[in-house]
Length: 281
Ligand code: GUN
Image 1 (tube, rainbow, N blue to C red):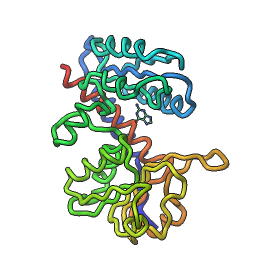
Image 2: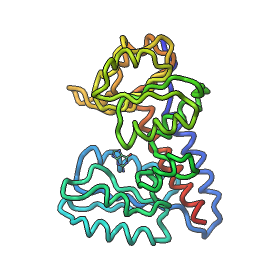
Image 3: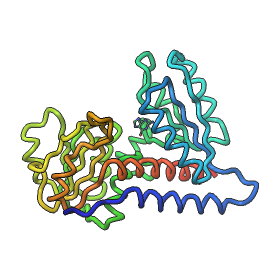
């Protein structure tokens, strides 16, 4: 049986630590602020936003929520972002994705000031990440790396296979693992011999969004399995990409879904907001 990586506990510790730091901000001084824009009423987005808001409240970060109509124009969103970029009370700006089709996601995201881009989605921040410069780090990849470090799992020299090449997880994670001296292989839907490659991984990270994508015959005995996927099964229950029941038996370490990478993403968002706040001062 693999060791269960308890991201819930680690994220709670991170949040408690931030809460303490924010509590120690001098009386009368401004607290950190996070602005969240949500366009339309995508049910999954609403769940994420609720969790983010709850964490802000717990930690003591002021949250400013903008629930925008599905029909809103791109210009109007850009106007709101322009205002938030200059708003002294706001340290972080997050535009929840996906956006409706009539809105150009790239233009909207890149309108956010790189100093307030707590998702690390802008071209400037992704560029900084690529060069290995200090700065805001993308939340889910950063959460994965933090989990490995908290469990003292060696990354340096290890063969890491990432399944899924998204801009939010797979691609930035490949850069971050490389920065940590891992040997990285990024595989995707067009990869030949996917199973064979996965089976050689010391650390296997799946970020696809497909239930049972990773089965026990794709996993090396004793390896580390990080499941970034969030899917719903036939009964509406949340499951990851990994066939947990069977993979758990051969993995050295494994993250459950829900309750590991998900909470870490939010904890990293909170850390980024605090980092942006400190940097502004
Ligand atoms: N939609 C799904 N995941 C994310 C995320 O990490 N950030 C934002 N802004 N939108 C998302």
